[in-house]
Every structure is written in structure tokens, then in C-alpha cells.
Image 1 (tube, rainbow, N blue to C red):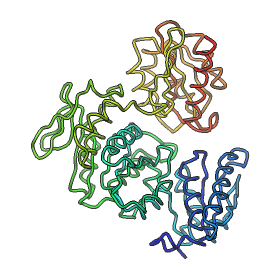
Image 2 (cartoon, rainbow, N blue to C red):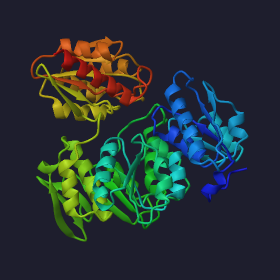
Image 3 (tube, helix red, strand yellow):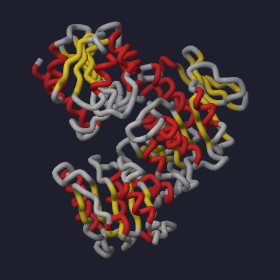
Length: 489
């Protein structure tokens, strides 16, 4: 029988399986486990990774178990049970609730077992949507969603200094839910939502107050059987809204106009790098001006040269965030200030510095060909780039990026992985390629084959699974190698 989720109080004493612990200390798996434990659930945490792989995460959970026992001596706090290296069917058929980490596919046989037994399958995001009393601003898209999320968060902090920024940006919103429920004034919440997290909202009819779809490119085709299936998941950000909530779409992509015809929102706004299509309202670029068009009136609210984060793709991110912030009640003065000071996120075309006249750039979050293309277009000067790339396949096409690598790269270091063969084939003999067994070797090879004025660019165009814990571990190792080289220099 399903657990009555109409009240948080009903979680006390419930038997709950958390499927997928993960390695981010404040991520979906750990965030959900902590929140459920705090509210008195009897939790089983199960993950296909073994105890050795998840040692830090297990230690984190147990640390919080001890903390909660001390904090709430009068409350029943149950010690969590860990089933690692496997899943047991009983933990999906004989419980009150299953909370699924976004890294777990919806087609999982264990998820299907739970649904067959009429047991609700939730995520940290769906639980947050159930109980959050304040407006939620959500962002999804193939590229730019993390930057747009963080920038919008900065803008909304002018309205309320406690504005929450969470979701796929490596922080579970459940980390903030309990204090939010005690707030007397409205706190804005900004959530980055991956396609996997959006799937957990299907059918809830609890959509965000403002939903942004930054763009749509082929991605995650290892998880989805087609681009259409992937876009179905992305479109859920709008499909769960009411007609009175707000949708923001990218006017420069044809597919967005098809989506607009299917979504319930009657308040549709658009962003564009050029003039908005006739009859559309939203925000667009007019030369060096950033302009908002609402109610037939054009209002300049900033300048392209003021936007601190570089790259043409970031102008679209700036337009999305600025439009949502305006619709959320942030003044143009505060929007303009945020555009001038927001420096971007780690691992997104992040310039680490120079060593011996060579610039090092950490773009570890570029896990698709489009991400690599954006970085090459920004830093390339016709053959000055030493690229570090490759990894695990997501079923993507590397033909276009292979051609650009040939034009912009003098040397390419590739990590082993299922995507690397495709990338190597796409590059052909247009650039010298070599394989590296780890980050230390990759940076050493890159350094040996670079010269004054070059850029050593980590922009993988693939997932990190296998060689690294995650994309941030990959970026962290690159940064460590840069720091080591700088010290030696």
C-alpha cells in the first residue's frame, strides 16, 4: 500500500528504500537519505556500487545519523541499513516508499517491481515539490542550465538573501526544505532539473512557477532510445505546469515552437540572439544591447559588454536568467549588477591561469559535442589548442566536433572509453591524437606538446564514468595537475 504523502508527519516510522546513494555530499541520494532519516523513516539505502566505492558517502550518512540522535533525543531516529553492491527485490516490494536517485533509469526492473506493487516511487525533487510552500523557478536544457540556474539565483538573492539554488547543480533541495517551512516571508527557489529529475514529476501537476528550457540538442542517447524520448522528458518541465504559470523558450530553435503548441501555459516568453519573432514577447540581443519586450514595449536592461561570463552561448544564458528574474520581481538595476559580477561556475570554460605562457581551461562539464564546440569557438585561434577529451559514450554524433578539432587543435589527448573510438574516427588524421591512462599522464602529454600562446583545454565531450568518480572529480584532478605544474615552475 502506498504511503500517504499528504503530510511530512506520515514519514515517521515508514519503511523507505533509497535507491542510489551517489557521491555528492549534498546530492540527491545523500540529501534524500538525510531528510528521510531526520523525519523518522526506517531507511534502507541500496546501491550497485560497493562499500569501498561509497565509503565517503556511507560515512557522511552515519555522521548525520549520530547528529540527529543528539539533536532530537525525544524522536525515534532509526539507524540506516546499507545494501551495497546489489539490489534485493524485498527492498522494493515490501516497503512503504521508494526514493530513486536520478542516476537510476526509470526502466530499472526494481523500480518496475515497486510500481507493480503500487508502491510510490519518488525523487528528492518530487518530494520537494510536494512540500515546498514558495515559488519554484526551474531550468532545464542540454546546455547552459547550470550557468542559468546559478545566475538567476544571484539575481533573486537581491530580492531575498536566502534564495535557494539547488537541484542537478549538486545540491538536493531537501537540504533546505525544513528551514524553508519555518520562514514567514516568501523565499524564491531556483532548481536545475535534468531530464532524469523531470521524469519524477510526471503526473504530479506540480510544475514550477517559471520554467525555462534553454536549448535542445541530442544528448543522453545511452539513457534514452531516441531524441524524441529525451525531449519528452525535457518537456515535462512545462507539461506539469498550470495555464497560469510561465514558460520561457528559445526562439532560435525550431523545435521550441513545436513544443510551445503542446504546453498548457498561456504565458509564454521567448529569448533570442536576434530580433524576436513577430508577436512574441521576451528578451533578445540587439547589437550590444540586451532588450526586454513585454506589452509591446522594448526596455533595454543591460549590455553585452557588461556580461562578465564570456562566450556567445552565455549571452543566451544571461537573457534567460534576466527575463525570469524580471518576471520574478527583481529590479533592472539588480539584474544589471548581477550580470556585471557573476563570474560563472567551476568547470565551465573556467580559466585556471597560465603557466609558462600556456593557458589552462577546465571545461569538465562539457559532456556533449556541443559543449566542446562552444569551448573551441571561444578559445580557438586556428590551431592553438591542445585538447584533452574522451570518455564514456552517450550515443552521440561526433562528426561536427571532429571537423572543428581538426581546425582548432594542434594535439589531442584522449582518455580511454566507449566514446573515444567515435571521437578518434571523427578527427581522423586532421589532428595528432594520443591516448592517456589517467589525468596525470594526460596533462603531462598536453604540456609537452604545447608552446607559448597555446591553450590546454579539458573539454571531454563525454561522460566521466569509469576513470573518474564524476565530472567534478575529473575537473578537480585537472586543476590539481595545473597547480602542481605551476608550483614546479
